[in-house]
Length: 83
Image 1 (cartoon, rainbow, N blue to C red):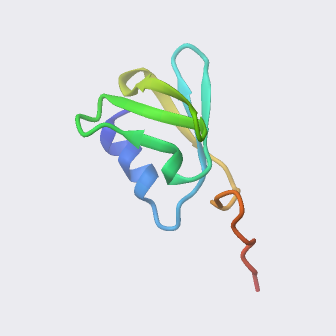
Image 2: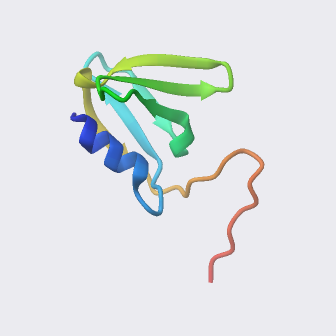
């Protein structure tokens, strides 16, 4: 995985939730772009599971970004109406 690919997933409009999969088998759900912070160097990412719980990831050990079909919403956001 490259930093450019990860940045593209985070900046997509509209944002699509995804799972970041690591080489060691761990998986990190990114349900909103605010839940993953990519360092300016692109080498390190911070994945937030809650307001005070996070993991520090080596982007070079990320094997894939798997997109889900859910819409991006923060807790407390009202559901969007679909026509």
